[in-house]
Image 1 (cartoon, rainbow, N blue to C red):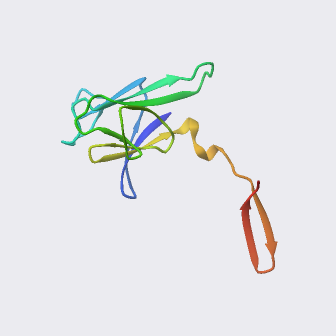
Image 2 (cartoon, helix red, strand yellow):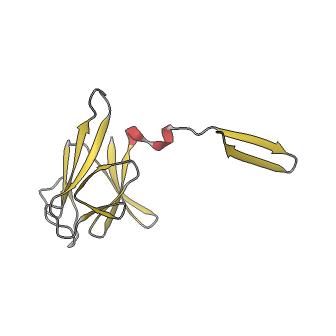
Image 3 (cartoon, one colour):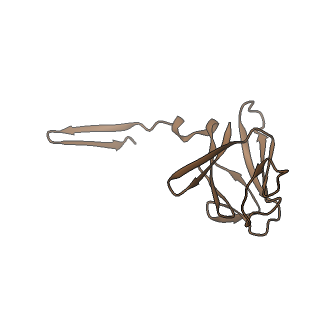
Length: 128
């Protein structure tokens, strides 16, 4: 399941699980995720979950700006719409969130390393 993790500098804040097929984000209280920030529009953006064709448990996440005044930013790029990837940083107004997709966690891939030992020296390098 994917989530947005709010952060400021190195401090982590609230974790917001994306449990609906469409999560509406904005300043208005009728949104699924309400952000109390005067730089965030009433209906700022939405995140949509889509099944990957022919793959039962694989989902893709897309973010779309809903014509907000100050824009939606993904990795410091203003977007109208784009696919989200694990680790992307999303900004609404002054609020920063990291997109985390547990199903596509980069930690699942293990890099094999080659170790060499010489008296007094220990070196680890990626195996090619």
